[in-house]
Structures are given as structure tokens and as C-alpha cells.
Amino acid sequence: MDDAAGEVVSAGGDDGQGVPPCYSKAMAKVTSKFQVSIPKALAEQLHIRPGDDIEWRITGGELRIVHADASRPLSRERRLELFDLASQRQAARNKLHRPKRPSSPRGWTRDDLYDRGHSR
Image (cartoon, rainbow, N blue to C red):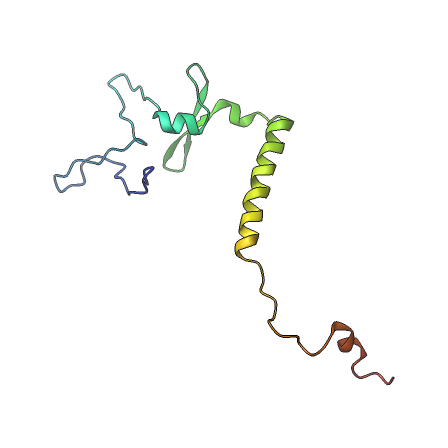
């Protein structure tokens, strides 16, 4: 698991070498009553607020927490907002990877290709 600073963080207990696990802002402990606090940075990122419902899902060998509102369809305004953000990201990528045009003329045109081999 990576923390916000990009450092790799241990996700489990003792690694067998006597080294305690590293904890980051993306980790939480389970209490004796099996309660877990969602780290504030993650809750803000997923727009989870006090009183919101969350779902616990077991997927493969992982426990996943899903905001209950995630299964509801997005409003038209939110979909348009997400579309605009995705369009801005794509435009930025296109600027970085714009195909380069030849610096000198080719000496031929596309029409020349179609006239080749035909009598004039």
C-alpha cells in the first residue's frame, strides 16, 4: 500500500523480523469492539461524512468499504462535471503527445498517390 507521500507502507502486523508495522494516514486500527475509524484524508476523498452509510464487502481476500451512495446514479450536473474534468485531462495529454509534422515538404501530395499508375 502507498501512503499520500508515495512511500510503501506495511499493511500487516509484525513482519517476522521484530519490526513493527509502519502506520500512515491511510491506515487505521481495529478496536476491541471491532470498530474502525476511516482516516480523514480518505473520507474527504470519498466524500464520506459523519452519519453516512457505508457497505462492507468481501472481494477475493480483501475487505472493501464502499460508500452507500456509490450505487446510486449520479446527478446530471455531477456527470457533466466529471465529463468536463476528463475532457480537460485528455486535452492536456493531447498537448504532450501531439504528432510532429515533417519539417520539410514531402515532395508529393495525397492526390499524387491516387493518380499513380493511371494514364493521364
